[in-house]
Length: 114
Length: 143
Image (cartoon, rainbow over all chains, first blue to last red; front, side, top):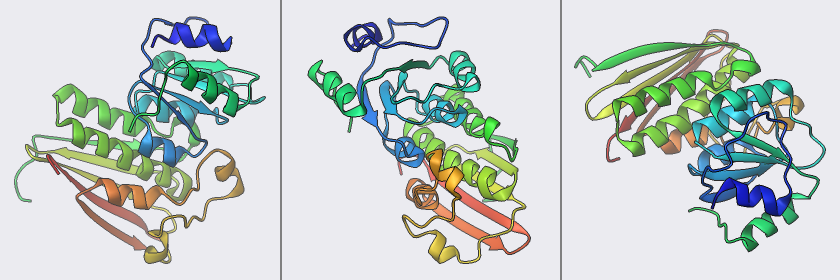
């Protein structure tokens, strides 16, 4: 599924200046524990989390995740946004609770990869 | 173990959160560029990241040394931190000495050392109080 489809359905916003919305999303994962994410995500995943600091981006880079959806009121710090831009990771924000975000993604046909 | 590795490189790890994870990304990218076994790359990435974060959070900085061989990769992680008082306990899943601040950032799940052990084929940990900690890891192709 293209990132663009997800952005449209969830009305996601992004603090990034340029985004490649044609990138493929092949699965999803939700967690706020970085050890859990590093152990269990797969390349191409979209990651739903409260965490947004430069280490979040390091995890996403290492696991070749496509994008991060930051839930809640945590505005991504500038350091995280610029690091994400240089690593080609897309960051989005939403007012929706995590449960709603995951539910909508599942409804769209996205699944967790095992 | 006396064979010369095909490629060897050391990566300094600074003791700050801002650059944490960067050495692991470099290690992974080198293995990818070489076209190394993808299973080894995946396991090295997880273990090296966890070890790097430990060096940042507890070791106050250190070094990661990677040696690439035809059928295995050696990763050595060294810090000059305070050392681990009880290694057996530190290896128990869920046990963590992380501060409140680290936990708020999503660390401190007590999965670091267990994840490293799970993803490596050989795992040796040496720690001396007041001197530091050293991890010797081996990742075998097809293993």
